[in-house]
Image (cartoon, rainbow, N blue to C red; front, side):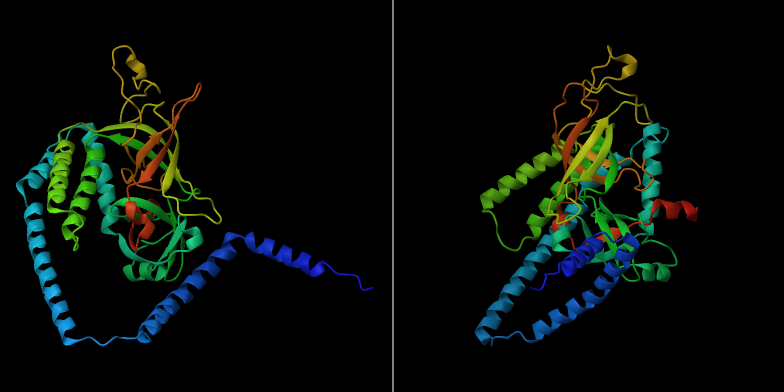
Length: 382
């Protein structure tokens, strides 16, 4: 009787195991090439499928009715645009911007913000707009591919798309460039567990500014909504509540920079699912920095005068988390997430652990991003 050989199965198993553990310098060019080849192919297949689609005959009555609907919608949009223009140019918005600019130039806090803002503006002046061209379903919360690469850098005469270039959506941090190809690049998202971002708590005007933007975004989306989602009475009530919330958020309050820690995603490196929730660890204020004195973990009182000071919560739900700039990769003061949950402190713990939700709520269905030059490139430029 012929003896059964298991050699092919062993070799096949070793081959599969080796493919899963190939070094990045081999895997990366293969991935870049696959995305580069498949992206135009998908476009051509879509156009081809559309050309074979059956176009039903349209009666004159249907065409006239459709034309009337389009004219009505166009008139509605024109009225909405006029309302939006009036709102954008309203006195309260101008006054709000004026109040934000009314700061003492000699104030150290304002000087630091000026420096961070200057860096941010320099980066944004050389930023590059990019379209998302591919997002693997099994790695949805881990990475995506954009349609810019080395060729775009050559055309600009400056390296915008490089390893460690921050990636934004709507002014909020969503990831970092990990691999750069000729015409496409891969973005590692902040929702991936392998990307760790140094952040700190911001409470006050800056935090409220981000919330105001979200309220404005909701108001704008409702104004541009073609279909009526709510009754007239419900729309009026919602409008009053949103206006009340805006008035509450616009009240004067100082900005405080508090606990510092690290933020990372909850998606695992392989076969990951959609998971927009972020985890945070190590949040405390044990060491003095430019923003203030070191503070006691539980009471938030400065160590220098524990008795006299009332103290303040170092971190709480609703706080805004922004980049610290300490890691040398991300510029300071980029909004990342809002604190959604603070884990209770256990006996002997030296820091808080938290959960957070991204400021960029559209990350699940994002179609375009803005890429900033890396801080390393900007330093070399200077």
